[in-house]
Length: 209
Image 1 (cartoon, rainbow, N blue to C red):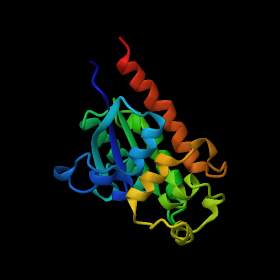
Image 2: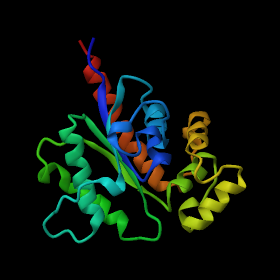
Image 3: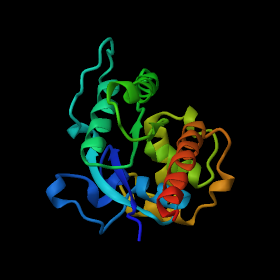
Image 4: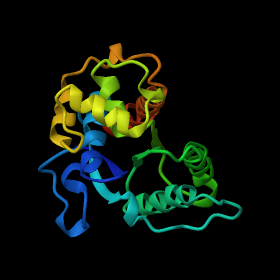
């Protein structure tokens, strides 16, 4: 039987990573986060988590000419995924109020294949305005990307979801019709498009005789 595709996860914290947040010595598959839930909706089986890091723990891999920390973070996470012998790196990063972050992340993704030869493909991007905005979009809320971070958190709470309740976020993703996401949730649509382009073909190739 072919080995499963291994995915390396990186995110802000437990909302994104579930019980894969924190020190690697304590990682387990007991509780999944938003990233795992979204990937599972795209590809239900044939893959597993091969490693994970919170964003603050990523090594800062220096890139010539790059000025934003998150360009270095993307490259550091890519190197972590490669060293963990994972087949995919999947991450998301909150934009918050840092509007330069979107381009910095895109730069890191674009530079990863040349800066880190043999690195895995990347499913990554910026949650606008933050991960709570993605969950609002999953729940059918339009115009989430025009919200401030605090407004998105309050709107999510108004729908009965605590901003820090990662398990409720996962349940919402599991129950959602991803075909009915608001069209203006562009950052979430882009992330899901990357996941569809990367993960199912890898799983299919791994399972091919």
